[in-house]
Image (cartoon, rainbow, N blue to C red; front, top):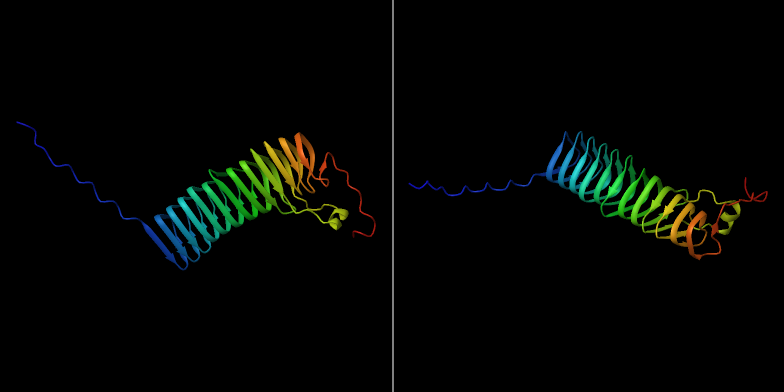
Length: 257
């Protein structure tokens, strides 16, 4: 006798998406949802795991944040690690106590991270930026920048406010600029200038910044660029740029207090 045949078991229906919508002040122990939206002050004591999150209002997370995509407006403060496979976008202030790893990172306002930042795509940060180190496919930073370690990206564009500090920039192309001082500021001394410790790239373009060491086959020195040491070829140079150790003259009496 032939074995009895049974019709194939039907696949169970897909689980409905887990949605969480907070309106007004909210407090959670943890959050696990496919789609999480907030509209008001929100606090999560421990971890957050989401597919997509749209956060409107100050959000504080006591543990880690993991998701596919996160869009935040206002303050987003995460004590632990932040990890998104897709974009992380913040219009306001992002504070991270742990590492940030993201498919793409865009912050307009303030970015403060206590540990390393790794971005698969574009790293965009405009405003106040405080990072120990960062790696990205491309990097575009502008404003008051304090990056004490290494920034590694294929292409980096830095528009630095005077007083900014960057330790080491490496990649294929690096462009760094800062406001060029007016004649009065030049006479009084270049106080608070934007400074970079070292740049290594295939092509480097500088305007108004001070760099200790540049190593590149092609170097372009624009207005008020200052480089202590160049390892490579200067292909273009503005007359107001300076190469080599810099001696500074004391301003004439009466011009400073």
